[in-house]
Length: 145
Image 1 (spheres, rainbow, N blue to C red):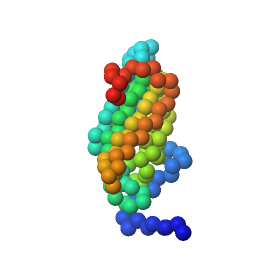
Image 2: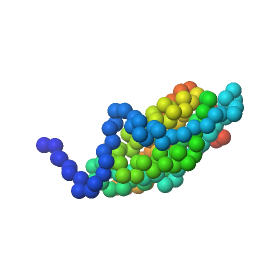
Image 3: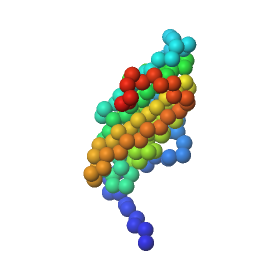
């Protein structure tokens, strides 16, 4: 017999099938001044929050976005607002990391991109989810990215 869980906390549950166009519109870009050069851009958000869709409890983690730009680069203030838009959403770790990658690829069309979600301990478990897009050109400064 399967248990049914009802969350007592108000939260918005995310559609895991497609991007949310409202969220995608939060992301702004600017022209890459060096589109012919492969260089690595890394952004880290150390205070990412979302909500566990099963328990309604907050989830905390760090999101690292690494990419090799094509014609566009990501404007950081818009990225901050985009990531904050997940604060009250009920979404699993795997879904949020994949959705972030999907949305960023739509907006930037990068040569390569990786999104890494490192989530805080919950029930004695630490979870890391890493997703990528495109061919990895191995531009990391060290092995422990």
